[in-house]
Length: 386
Image (cartoon, rainbow, N blue to C red):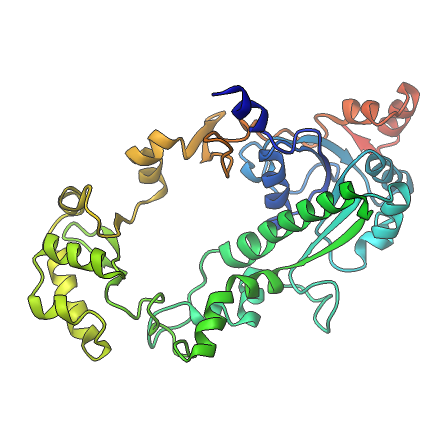
């Protein structure tokens, strides 16, 4: 690694984020910031949250952990004091909860006028549904995203919780936090980031709003080019019961795929004749079903066809491309994704395993200026847990 690469590897070095521990998108946003080099102090409830993971909590990697009872006034005061020396704070409560605890935006910005206060919710801080419960599947349902995902004449298919929680939630919050911190450092002062999964999921659908305006995307699932409507952009089962993906949209890739599989000339020449897509799908499916996946992998190796095997996680860990690039890493025996994106060709940091709630309580408090007797009193009173 060059000297410039080493300097650039952790772009958020020197940035401090306070995270009020939650589940899903909040921890993911904090993980992204920690992966980029930020110091993240995770404030957990005494005993921890059973939903947040423990020893294998990948979303909570690379943090310092302090356990604080926020229901006690002195516990909320600890958070405000931590905010005084931080660039940002992340919370994932329902609207109004942070305010009732004494750690809302007004409380924390009073301690630090340049603080970026990140709020992660499903429905947002405003609107008639703001205080209602929900999960990823509900949030993407309200945006039109869930309706659009699935096979023709089949039910909507939830894409794990990638679209709401992580892509439309945590990633959106991370972008908001970074934007706010840049603004604050330029003299713009503190800001409150209202990151809502319905907003983020809607943003992820931007291209499909465009297609709808152009008349090429409607309410019928499984008919669009990118939604398994096109036979040349789909998954197919192999002879040995595995799956492969085909994404040969452009002419040059489609032509080479036809060469590899020796597809009929009529099929080669009429790729975009939608009236024949069902017919062509059966032909392509039969060609793929006649071979094992390993045989297809060998046939397509190095060819410009937009082909890839559909791998399980265990297979993905071992794939030569992922191994060569270091896409996945082992952290204390737990395989997980390496920090991304890369800077000057290298990951920004090397993650550390999730620590237990309260593992860093003494050190975090000492670094925040608490005297030894204050720390002892907070621990003895049960407000802080080790």
